[in-house]
Every structure is written in C-alpha cells, then in structure tokens.
Image 1 (cartoon, rainbow, N blue to C red):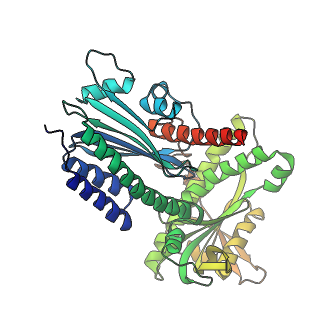
Image 2: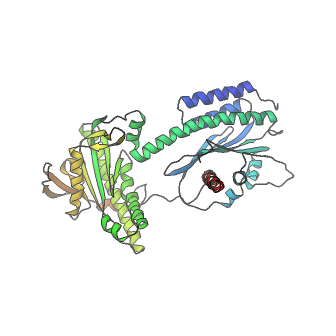
Image 3: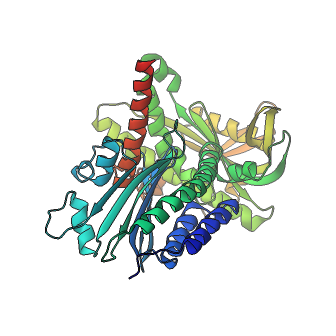
Length: 442
C-alpha cells in the first residue's frame, strides 16, 4: 500500500468539516461523517476514538469509537462518583495526560510485550501503529477533545499520514468545538428550562411578552415538612432529602409528554400540553394521572428505604388540573423566565395546598377527572377558593400505585466511570492543577 496521502482529498475532508459545522450538524453526525471521509481519502484507519467533555449536569463526557466497516459506537456517561479503574490508570491516555504530552505514538512490535493492556486488544484487530492526542479547545478551559488513531497498515503510519492527521486534527477540533458548544447550549436550555421551552428560546423566542396561550394538563407538587427540616437539619441533609423527593416525585412528570416548567422551592409545576379538543385533553390528563400513580409508588418505595435507615417519612402533595395557560416570557427586559401563567395555574396551586386539609396526597379538579376515563374517583366536596371559582375536589384511587412499570422505583445509579469519562475528568483535574500551579508562581 502506498504511504503517500493525497493532500487534495484531505483538504476536501477539511472543507466538509467546515461546511458541516456551519450547517449545525450534531456531534455524532459530524464525527461519523468525518471518519468515513477520512478513510475514503486513503488513510488506512482501522479504529478512531474521540472523547468530548459536555458540561452537562447529568453527563460528563461523550465517547465515539469508529471501526472501519462497522460504523460508529456512541456512549454517554452519567456524572456519578466512582473510582478510576486499573484499566484506565494503565492506559495510554493516562500516560499522555500525566506527563502533559500532546501526542503519544507507538509502533506495535510482535516481539515486544505490550506497553499498555489496551494494545493487546488492538493487536487482535490487526492494528500495527497507534497515536493518541489531547486537543484543548482553549488554554483556559477544561472543555476539549481527546482521542486516538489506529492503523492496520503493514508499514504503520508514514510521515505523510501523520502530517495529514495533525493537520486535519485542527480542523476537526474547530468543527467539533462548534458542535459541542451547540450541544452545550441545548443541554443547558433543556436542563434549566425544559425541552419545549428550551427549544423555543433557542429558536429565538426571547422577547418579554412573547409566548402562546395553550391548553394543558397541569401538575403542582410540594414536599411536606420542608421548613421544619430546614430548621432542624444541616444544609447537606436538607438538600439531600429535597433531591430524594424530586428524584421520586418529579421524574415521572418529566416524561411521556410531561414537562417540568420550574422548581419552586421544595415544589415544582409541570405541564402536559394538548390541543383544544377532547381526545387530546384525555391523552394529556391520563398521562398526568399515570405519572401521579408512579410518583406515589416511588414515594412509598423511598419512604420504606428511609425507614430501614432510621429516617422519617417524606410527605408530599400533588394537585391535578386542566385548563388554558399563557406559555412564554415574563420578567425584566434583561432577566426573563419562561414558564406558564394564568388562572388555571393558580387553581392547580390551590388544589395542591388542599392536600394539607384532606387525608389524600393527590387531589384533582372535576374538569381533570372528567378526562380520565373509568378511573375510580372519590368526591371530597366543593371548595370556595379565594379569588377563584368554586372547584369540585376529587381524589383518585391509588391502590394500583404499587405496580411499578419499566422505570422502576428509582433512577438507576451509575457507579462505573467509563474510560472516556475518566479521560475528561483527568483532563479537567489536570487543568485545575495547572491553574493552581500558576497562582503559586504569581
């Protein structure tokens, strides 16, 4: 096989990267298209691995591994604590970062034992030459790209191949930085505003007063006894308990059409948008009711485990309603919030408050219950709410709440840190250490 690489074809790959970034292609599309085009340009790549830090509350890194003829494997990694694996400590990435190297290249010699355990796996794939790299997006950030190139060419990487890879690596870093920043913006908007609201803001709905009037099933939930807990417990215990409550109760309302609009102290408001006709209202209300069943089951499971730990139960109240709401921006011209407003929001808030009066943790309006089919309801009475019309208050039959579905009682705990995530964690820690060293020298 010729060791010369066409600079014209490699430049075409660079042009594609630029155009792909300008078009706003997502990271997966960009990485897959890049690897396939680079291989088509004549580089005998067997395997490419790339990792990116994502700055996401739930995900610390994304890892992409491309194999010639097999396509792309994508992994996202939850940001959970854990202990670095022996595999990672003995990896080329760890060596590269520990010694503050930009590149690490190794030719595979069958007569020489593997320097790193992963090389044994690469040998089985027929890999003959390997080059790892780190490419920060800027000098003062922990965001960046790390990866490795592997070839099965009998002659390994020639100088012209290495030159092409180093040159195209810069173009890849620029294009992926744009994709990562776009993904970061989407992550932040989705995490802090919710899926629909985040998309609206990213699409340019950012002026005060902009929004729509929509119909939606409404949910308002609140944790009981939080004020007393805040006064009698330390900050860490209080925050941990509050997060346990949100994990158990809030999570079901952020799926299957539901969107949590905002967390308000120890409570939250969620919406299930729907069209203004009966069939869509039925779908939205029944989805909200199913989530209320699930939330009740999850709270039962959580309180059982807390009891086994010698901790007190967490009480809660949920209000369910349906109506028209204003959905959009309010606030200052330079400090806005995106949420829902209107009389229906006030009504669901009052319904949630009534769970303190009645011995039921979930209450609904008659309008909401009328869309929920044959579910059994207990009518509790009519309530004159200050400044609001009279509401008939009902409570659903939650006897089936013990039957948990595919979501399980609680969110799974991811206690294993992947290789890609460990790369980014080490990259972040190394950057922080370097910043500390610079301060000591000043």
